[in-house]
Amino acid sequence: MEFEASQIQILDLETRLQSLRDRIDKACVNNQVEKLISAMESLKAVERQESELQSNINARRAELEADITELNGKLAAGDTSCNSLSDHLSESLEKLDLAKMELAARLREIVLVKRQLGEVPSHSELIQYERRFSELYAHIQEKHCQTQKYYATYNALLEIKELMLKETSLLNSISSQFQDAIISTAGRMKLIDSMEKIAKGSQQKLEKVQVGLREEQKTCDVTRERHAAAIAEQRRCHSLLKAFQEQCAKNERLRSQSSV
Image 1 (cartoon, rainbow, N blue to C red):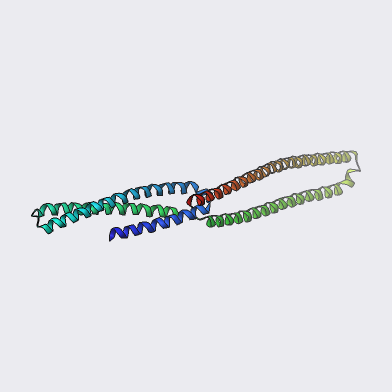
Image 2: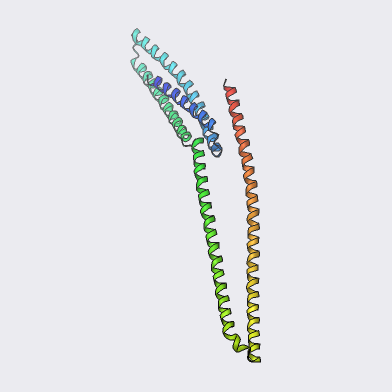
């Protein structure tokens, strides 16, 4: 009875494993293909070992039943070699227990493979994870762009404020010293030198701003190149994904045709 119960359990496990195979085949999980192949190979090896063990157990069971029948016949005929019969019966029972232990070990291996297959996320779960990560990435990129925009606006306004303060200070200085400077020749020369220094400082400031502008232009060009490369990579990945999905669909059709 225990052996028949084990057979029923094995058939149930095989049915559930086949259901898992169908589920995995329909999922087309691209980033878990290698893990699935390894698990399926392990499962096939276990199934082959289980089939061989099942054949051995059936043959051994037939032998043991024949021995038991023979022993019962000898006992019914009044054979006096009871000790030899008892030893033979004990040996047969030990072999039967050993076969049951081997069968239990194979069942544990099947359960382990089943757990490994169950740990692989389904196609719908992977799609949901991908959607959530895409939404999170888009939200982070939006916040990052807003932060960069605010920092750039703040820096520009701060620089404009500094330039306006310098301009106001310069105009106030010229206004307060102009009347006294034009009275004498030395005052006029001093005013001219002061204006030349102001013009030189303004020119240096302009050159500095131009250097910063050129650096920003280089950064913009590099960003555009990276964006173009990213778009090309996205298109390549999209084409590869489309080809992979087509191959999965083709493989599914071939499986369905071969199973008919």
